[in-house]
Image 1 (cartoon, one colour):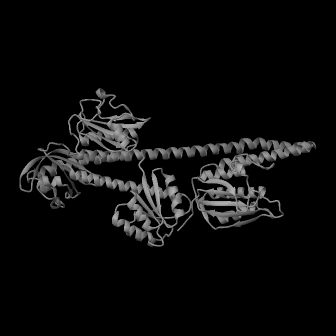
Image 2: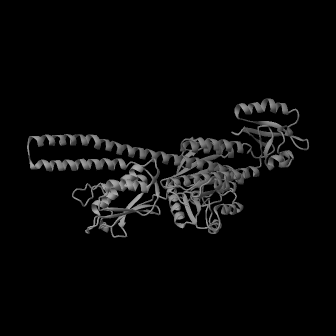
Image 3: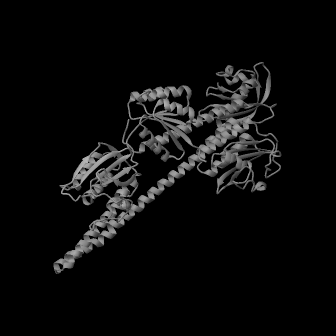
Length: 622
């Protein structure tokens, strides 16, 4: 039930668009990528789908990415739009930002660029949703019965809602830019200046009664709440004491709750802040938070304890309750009279209820002893508050997974390093002793068995060296750089090739990876081709290296690998040679895995073996 984020990727190269979409979806399961090969097709998909972000190339044949951006901005002014292009220049970047692009990202080699792109997509979508939520918050404030205003640091009105202006007999536009003294009788101004405002500065807020002055000169007693914001603004909430509802603290409390949720360091703190804020903002009789776990909604926080212990403690998801309905439907449910629906509340004392899902995490519930206790403003504010809690919980889950992934990689690399140390020291030391004793034995006697012992020790040395290489190459790659494949191939071929072998590099290209390990890949593949790929003719083996859409290949014209053995060749110890250790291709597989790549063997065009390294991604593109 994870919320999906739909991305429209427009690029006139269909293969690149599809490949980039696959990489983005691999980066985060929430991402759902749809592709288009032209601006016209992209605009049609915008009308057809609910798109959360657009990623677009710049240089396209019919309409450029900038022209498409301008069309999008006319209809979707707030939709995140990232220009993702291989044509990089300050002029293009400036033109993109001027046209309203959210960001400009130049294509590079390797797969790291998709991690960056995915992160930016997620960040910009989250920001857009946050802006939408803030707009809903302002809409809720605008619709609220309380009068709410915001004063700038000079004491002038920067925002006034309709209710606030109506309370004093003005239009909102008339009050903007006016000083707060406009709304107080002359004798009340010194109290506000000398008592109330200093208290706000010291404590961050103030609540009490003041005397208000209407436009027609009439005065009235008002319930007044003041709170400061991080930007130095002053939020003023005013309610005429004749008003039957006490909702004057909603904006300040919601702001404070959002700030607290942003800094919460664990789930329990999020639930506690959510419950406390709901009580303060919405004045509900009872508030509870249930979390989905093991096919049930399990209570994690409640505004009351003791006599209500166990209320909504565990609710199997198959049960028909307002909580399970809201969770399954992913929609808010408001019940004005709990005696009318077929579902009976756990406590008959409560008459009305509001339940809203916290995405796929759980539910937020509030109940009241009064009928019709929850109006549209209550619903809006509850959903906004729950939205802040959901963002906090999502942040904590993302941080947890990142920590676990990082710790696991560190443990894996540490284990491999420890193993490599053991192989390098503890196993090589007795081997060195054996080799020394063998030399002494040769000086003392002449036996045909000593040569066999020497061959066995040489093989043991080779096995130890290959095992050491395998362990170290299996460590995850944490740093990558652009590597020119042609240069690496030439160096490797000089070390491996025999006089009757020839090499052909079909393409010039680069990949992002660890240069030393990439060199090991080519050396092992070349050595495998030379040692196992020789034909029965007088000519030696021919090897070709070329680029793939998402990687590269090494092919030869030798006898190839039988289809039923192609998965086995990458296993440690697999070899068809009496002198081989069976580690060469296993090391290739380990290096590929350490990069996050895939390796497979198939038939080459010449009938030999073709090793394909995929998942590498392009080093650049247009």
